[in-house]
Length: 256
Image (tube, rainbow, N blue to C red; front, top):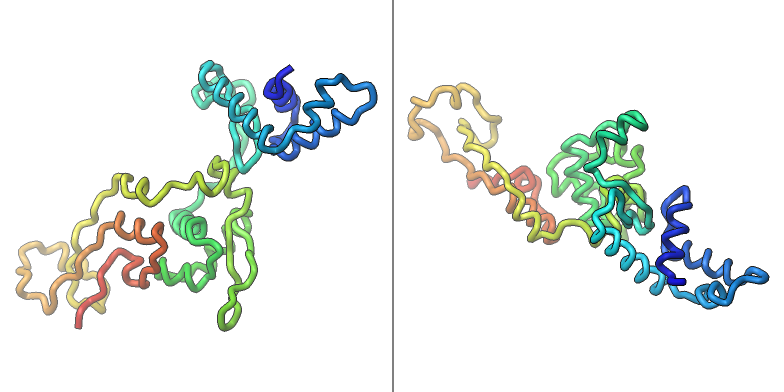
C-alpha cells in the first residue's frame, strides 16, 4: 500500500486541513497500535519530508486527471477543494453564505507593505505610504490578518507587525514565498494618470485650472511636478526601498 493513497484517505475523511507534521503523527500513531499490519509499522517511520513529497505527487496526479476537485496546500496545510468552475451548482446546493466585507484599497496597500517588509513598524509604513495608518492597522488586526511581532531594537522600541496564518488562508497562499515577486509586479497593467495643473507646488490642485484648457502654461508660476510611474513605486517597495512620503504618493519632490 502506497503512502500517497493512505494520505489521500486521511484527507478525504478529515474535517479540516492537515499539515505534513500532523499527518506524520497519525502515521506514527497507527504504527504503534497493537496488532497493526507490518505495512503500517513501516509507514509509521515516515519522515515529514517523505509525507510532503507524497502529497505533492498526489496533487500532481489529481491535477493531471482533470477531476472536479484537486488537492491544494493553503497556509502549510493540505485539503481537497472543488474547482471554481463548479461554483454555480455548489451555490445552488449549499446556498450562498455571508462573507466578510472586502478590504478597502488603503487596507490592501498597507497589508502589501507589511507582507513584503515584515516585521515592520507603524512609522515605517507611514513613511512608505505617506499617510497615517493607525485606523488601517486596527482593521487588519480585527480581521486577524496581521499580528504584533515584537518590538524593534531602536530608540523607543516601537511595535512591529507581521502577517498571520489567516493572511495566507485569505489569499490562498501556501507560504510567503508564494507572494508575487518584484518582476511579476512590473507586469501588472496600470493606467498612467494624467498630469494635474497646480498654481503652486505647496497648494492643492486647482480644479479651475484643470477645467480651463485655454489657460497658457506660461501663466503658471512654477512648472508641474512630474508624475512617477505607479509600477516604479510598486517595484521600489517590493525591492526593499524606503520611499519618502512624497514619493510614496507617486510624485517627485518639488524643486526650490
